[in-house]
Length: 121
Image (cartoon, rainbow, N blue to C red; front, side):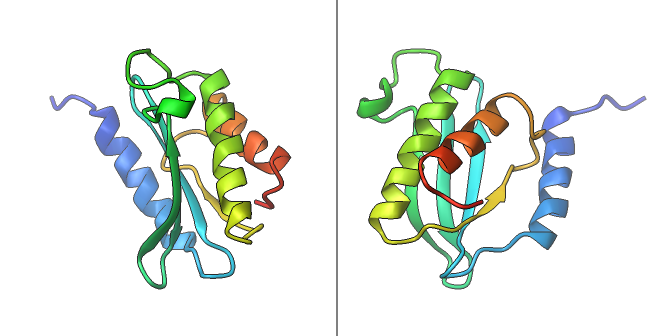
């Protein structure tokens, strides 16, 4: 009997989401990823295949690489930082790509913090 691999299942869910969600120049895609230790977010224009803005807990201004930082508090910090950086590029709308993760906990905290920062998701 085969074992269930959670990464494979999350990958399938993410593929299904990506069929429906795509970013444009006016409304790029905000995609998130959570490893065991860190939180990452980037904003991508899928038409040109370019990353416009990125943020993660490995950056010095969010705590650096030394701490375990994949929690709600740091997800909120990353959400606010990504909104701040995107608004600096004069883009205030985005499409949210949850990356195959459930919209709950850290994912919801990051999205809500981005909304509070002025982003329209």
